[in-house]
Length: 152
Length: 152
DNA sequence: GGTATGTTTGCGAACGATTTGCATTATGAT
DNA sequence: ATCATAATGCAAATCGTTCGCAAACATACC
Ligand SMILES: [Mn+2]
Ligand SMILES: [Mn+2]
Ligand SMILES: [Zn+2]
Ligand SMILES: [Zn+2]
Image (cartoon, rainbow over all chains, first blue to last red; front, side, top):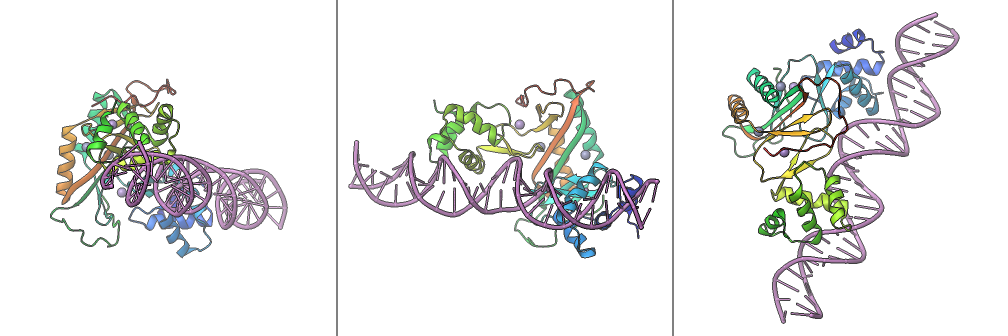
């Protein structure tokens, strides 16, 4: 019954409350990039006495503890994913918000080289690509389910 | 006396008000990536009867007219630069916020290739690198002037 | 140059995402 | 079971940004 993230939290010595357990479970079961409202929505299904403020606080806690990572996908809100996933970036289908994950060693190497040539050591970076499927010019299925992220 | 951006606005047939002239001048003279508050601060020096709301509205107008471009550098606010500059990305010095511009044809090509392999046509993309100078481990001059952007 | 018409402005209020103060409740260690 | 400390819920505050509305303005027309 203890979720993957709950175990991680215990390892890190975080005090485990009921709401933290539920949020950990929600995040463990998520295979997409939910924002805080979405996490709250899913958490409330499991236990209705969880406030949005607690979700905000817990997300920050888990982020600080490096259990989850914030992803900025360009819409106004913060989205999250498990930190244990391999490093990757996101291609956002602008027709419907669907997110495709990808990794590229060449890209990582190139970015290192660019920074080095500018005399810098990289401490972080961000890359997103926005696109539409090849050969799709209309805005078909503009209302399909969103962010069925595919694990990298 | 008519600034570069003011000329552009006239070409596009925008109604030229006093405040739009001033904001155009401020943006024409900027060689960095000011946010709206900063544009307002600079505008007020030239003519004190310019409200922040008008700056917000004018930035959006100029962005829609493709006279300026919004840059998201990861701090909470929107920053802007002239749209006429060549395509480039930003390396942010995390010690002091200084911004270094760079362009990389290899990077652009690679990104195209990645998207194509995923079956997508790119409609936009974003990349920023955060770093500290090679051989700088302390946080020296953490309060120097910020964002002396170097034209690409 | 005056005048009508539609735009733009300034102000403050509204906004959406996130954080925070504070009184209440729960956790984990005795 | 007790207790000190940390976490929660709620509402109010914050930050960047947008919006409604009445007043001021730009431009086209006489
Ligand atoms: Mn991801
Ligand atoms: Mn730039
Ligand atoms: Zn990367
Ligand atoms: Zn690029």
